Image (cartoon, rainbow, N blue to C red; front, side):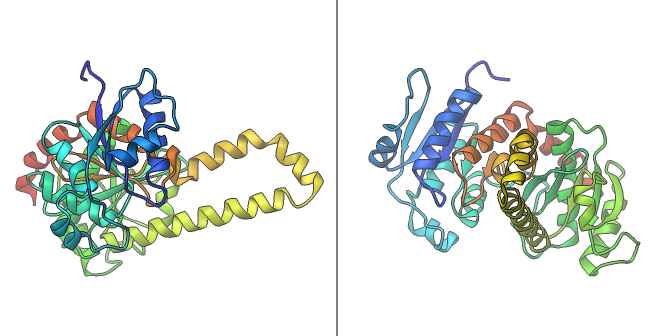
Length: 339
């Protein structure tokens, strides 16, 4: 751990509610997590948003960036044309050592491309993967890839399993993380050609605690610590979970406020409801780590509010403190002969 506050570069212009919610989240994160946020964007715009907050005693810096990549822009084309885009400058802050981690809540594609092009890949990684920690009835489960790579080769899923195992061991303290292939059935031989080939590769890595195929319900029952899949399957699974969570919480709120008697009951169980909501609310989980790049990169939801940014900074800080990047690189090099 460093004696100085960890410096986290934050794209102040990324996301549906930028810059107001991003800046508010950065201020709250500086106070709650004792970090130094580097807010990246047009200085005049960022400074105007900062005026709405009490920043006395906080270490917050502004890093100038004159251009912005919008959610609808083509990531690669925009990055080539907009050399001074806020997401590119955010990644460069990590590359040049001005920050130890980056947080972005705008275009996922732009954040991934900027991190990959600027920071580069870890040795032993063909394509970085988005890792999302899902709540479960027991310990959390890491799902990867959650959307970075729609098409994957089998050896990429092996790399995802190795990265995920290191992450869960070092960040969540799981002694021997259970790694499974997300599939349509648990039985050997289930699924498509990718699942079959990935199963074979992961089962041959002696350093992995491979448990075979797992199904979608296993993600939330505590039956696995790491679930690997291609980004197409992972993103569909993730968005489905978010949709079901939102539907259930909306229906529950409607039913509990439909009658005075149920409203009274709702008041009595309000703490329990708040706790349950916190376990399934995406804003409480702080976004996803882009695993496999040479730097700590946390990608938050495009609709992130200030609370989501606070939690994204928390994830970034924890990743830096636990040296996930260094340990992951070492583990991949040790396993290079297994692939």
